[in-house]
Length: 112
Image (cartoon, rainbow, N blue to C red; front, side, top):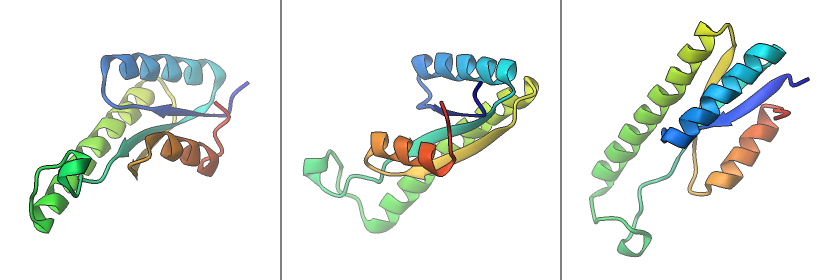
């Protein structure tokens, strides 16, 4: 059936359902999972929706977002381990979420 399943998550209740169903499918089919969270960069200008902060603060904020994302995909990995599913936890940095998901699917050779 499937050999590698990509599960993109953003931490929402709906994505939690996707995680649960994806892990269950992987468990049934013997597939491995790539758990992905895409993290945007901090907006650099007012017109991008950002509040003006200096470069060091922006880097600190981006690092906090990355750390939170890593914790999120590590949580998926732990859930998978409990079900006997091998999960690779991946954090991608991009403002173009859909493109980052497609790129990750290709890079990791996911078939679902």
